[in-house]
Image 1 (cartoon, helix red, strand yellow):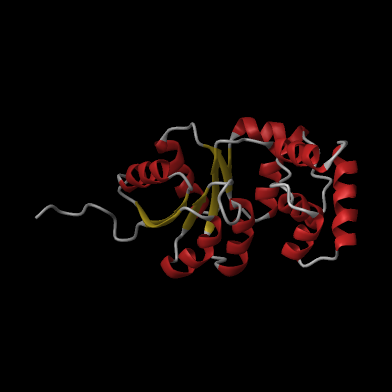
Image 2 (tube, one colour):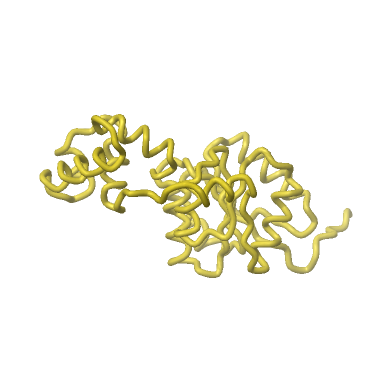
Length: 210
């Protein structure tokens, strides 16, 4: 019978990635590391907290753009619900606004997906020891980038309007009055320097504010 050469205690990792092939490949590659064990895999952001409460990972490796709930919002949820779990954001989109939001949500690291798996494994080990790991190029860009001018509610309203939802539809989704939604949309359009909410959404996404 083959022997398991893993150490007595492996780093337990939760992996959240919506692309099945990418998720499977990452799980396989990380599983080859002698001290890392992928204990949970999810394809939706709104499944992260439940999976973490069940599997109790040491580190959660989260993509940002996930169906159901973004990895950035899920990072804040984990900070509150599973405080012992360290969060490492791994994304294809290195926007300074995303980095700021990740740090505000309590993430311990932020890496771009084009790096080697050895670098990712090293980052997992580092955040577990209390270090913060940030992609150097993105860190430099974030220092020179302006913080998001949007309030949390303005961000929610813009997110809810992405698919062309009506004001009444947004109000129903967010449980706000229609006048509040109109005011927040108007404020967000003004703050982003755009002409309408579709442009405001595009600009906010490009800056990493959504």
